[in-house]
Image: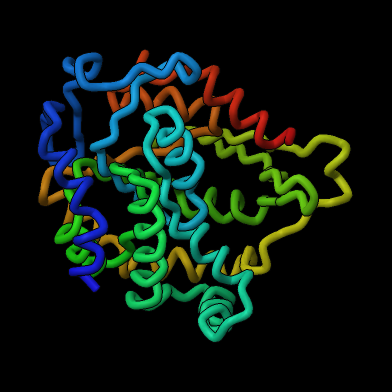
Length: 296
C-alpha cells in the first residue's frame, strides 16, 4: 500500500524539492513561514487575489466537528491546491451500495475510528484521481488520525506544516448538535448560538448561529451520527488515539496549535495571521465564494 501511495505522490515530491520556499520553525508548538520569495515562485490569480503554491503539503488536525473542513477548504481555494477531506471521501462511499459501504455505516453509526486499511484504500483512490488530473500539493484533513497513519503518510509525502485546531469539548458538543444541512441546496448551517462567558482561566467563546434562509427552513436535516452520545464517544476516541499524532508532528517541529475562540468571521483572520498569510489570501473573495456556494 505504501509503495502505491508513494508512486502517486512522486510528482508532488519533485515539486516540493524544487521549491525555494523557506520554512523557519519557531518552536515546538509555533510554526512560522518565510514567504519572501512567494511572488517569485507563486502564480498570481487575479480572480482569487492570491498566488498558487502547488508544492505545499499541509495537514489539518482536530477533533471531529471542530471545523477542519471549513478552514482547510478555504485555504485550499485561496492557495490554489486540492483539498482532500477524508470525511467527504467516507460520506461519498457511504452513498454506494456495496459491502464496504455497509461496513463503514456500522462503524460510523457507533462513532468508531475506521480501520487503517479502509481509510488508506479511500485515500489511494483519491490520489489516483489527483494523479490523473496532474494535481500536485494538497491540504489534507481528517487524516492521519493515529500515530501509525502519521508514520505511513510521512513515508509517502513531504508534509511541511500540520495545523492543529483546538476547541473546548463542551463547545464542540453544542456546535455539533446544532449542525444542519439543507436537503435541497446542501448548504451547511448551524442553529446553535454558543456564548461561553470568560473565566479566570479561560477566554470567552462566542459562536453565533449560522441560520438558513427562509427557503431552506423546512428542508433542514441532521447527520444521523450527530447525537450527544456519539459525539462524546468521538471526542473520547480522538483524545486517546490522536493525541500521539500531535506529539509526533510536534517532535518534528511541524505542529501549529491553534485555539478556536469564535465563529468563522473572527477565526478566519486570526488563522491567516497565525500562518503568516495576511495579504496573500483575500478575505472577501473567499467569504463571497462560500456565500455563493450556499446560495446555489
